[in-house]
Length: 334
Image (cartoon, rainbow, N blue to C red; front, side):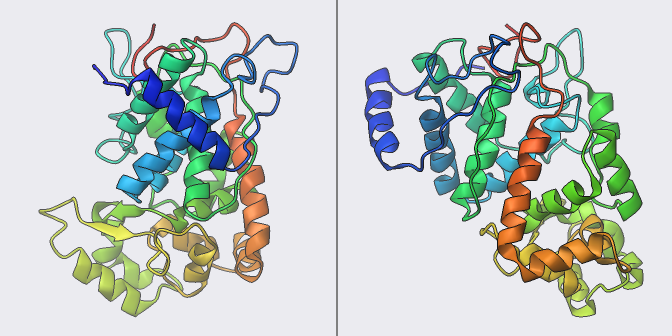
């Protein structure tokens, strides 16, 4: 795929403006540790984070929904053999990529945004910044640009040499999952029950197709404990044509759909969780419901714990040192 990049002179001018005005996102030590020989970009590509931030800022300005889409890309990458940018690979003669897996097909978006950012990085610092590090950083910047917290993104991931459609089908939690399944899926990749509830808060921004919660619309929703019946009726009206038009979208958070806040958890206690996997967090007492309640009462606690869980997820099985490669094009191997 051919991508047209802006001129280098224009890029430098943009960087000077951005670096003077953007928040301070200094790069921490790399994931593999100081002795691993993996780039931290502080010397090899000091403008890396400014380039990435600029790319996300442009994309979100053009399409506010893109913030949630870029955040989701990082999630779906890390749940399949670690955070290695395998989700970005197109199919090859050697393997089938993850883009056509059930959780991703006609659902994941934002690939062109990553392409554009990578193109600018290759102009500034050829073969230096990994696609996996780009995904981790755009996730952080998407949250920040939506009004959420920011955090330091540990750097040093390298890019995978393969992808796994089967692992994507098996590892990524489905929108109709119950709590036991959610906990199991998260624990299988090294994340705790608390991480699961905390990271589910990413659903405070973004949209979902009616087809992802179709079973609730066909009567199963009436049996969902705690689900608000007026809310269900509104979804049935919105999605009335979704059988023939599966492009209909519903807000994951009807109250503040484009703002990263704790409203998602407030909605759950009100019986207005869009997905079955959302509302499941408050079914019964104790455990997940108690944590939801704590985030309703203390939004700053949610922000702090979301940051910690994002760093933890972003550190799942990274390729470092001589593992993998630094792709020149995020869609294909070098």
